[in-house]
Length: 254
Length: 252
Image (cartoon, rainbow over all chains, first blue to last red; front, side, top):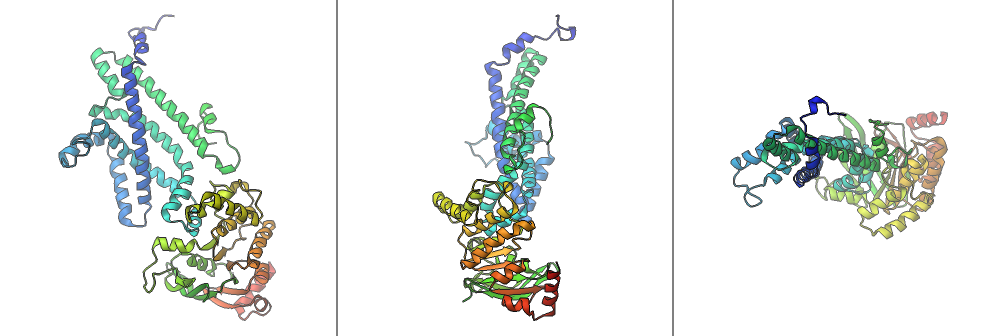
């Protein structure tokens, strides 16, 4: 079979040669590190701000509202450039990490703070999904707020929190490509530098896309596994595992 | 000195005054049943004793100390102090409120380990014994969803008992149960009463009040209308409200 004419100019062998090259793998590894660190820090921030949003003190609530409003309401790319260029300009005296934050650290900070705004709402919904009788029972046993939250409420909130958090992680894997604007050599920047010099746009974008699909697919499987772990319904009617649900592509909840 | 001393307690929700000056004492080892129509403020009173609600006026003394205010002031107790008081008062809820992500054993061990900082082995031993005491020695590893309502409520009682409380509060502990499951929970409550536990029980179970309680308190419209021995209350209630209440209950 001959290659169709409209793809005749594409060098498939080139894609195969470079797909697992050291250069590309380094980009993949950087994308993965950015996403994982950004996600972990984002979940931590989201938890803290969710608790603030549910605070009894209006001032504390308003800090959380402002955080969500600001970081959800401005483009991520603007925030990334802001942290890298505008922050040192506006606040030069703040100089951790020997005077400047590396592009990588800046990228993680920008992704985490942005992600935290989304995670705040997800965590809040999770916490509010837990019956108030649980808090009362915990407190009647002498648990303080923090202990009741950690041992009783948050573990139960996980069931509601994990599915949207999986979506967030998959979005994060893709959004991390925006960090290329402050020259962090993640997957997209690697591809961009290569197609700029070789003019093999199609080949390099296919290489990048294949790797993004690999990462997001692994992310989805991991999410399904986590869901099946936490979504046991605590001993109620047995459910199909999250993994088998994923593999059968039934989507949605049964 | 009474173990529990409720003094002139008032509680409002918005404009609705639910408790209008309640005074009540419970002696060590006494079993007191609180009766009354729904909306009379019975549950609110229990919740105030455990500080799940803040009172608006009056005071509540447990073991000689205010559970509401710092000594000699009108400042509320700090959270840590309230938690310490609660750890010595057991509470059983109408809806059980077991922790669904923990097994029966996990539910009973949780507070002794996390609040009292007991070693796990020791807490487990106590929890196993306490669950056996409420007749659930064979269901240690069952999750709440795998238990019947009556079994869940018995785990909830064990959970409270494992803290070795000086006072047990029962907030309509059998009201959410199917009729055939009420008996097993009442049996546990009767055993507790017979063993000398100090109990304050809001209940609709007249049989329990009559047979297990030392004293009956009848509340209506946020006020204690009358109190006395069960024999006297059930045979010869002093107030018209109590007579009406008993008549309605007997018709059911």
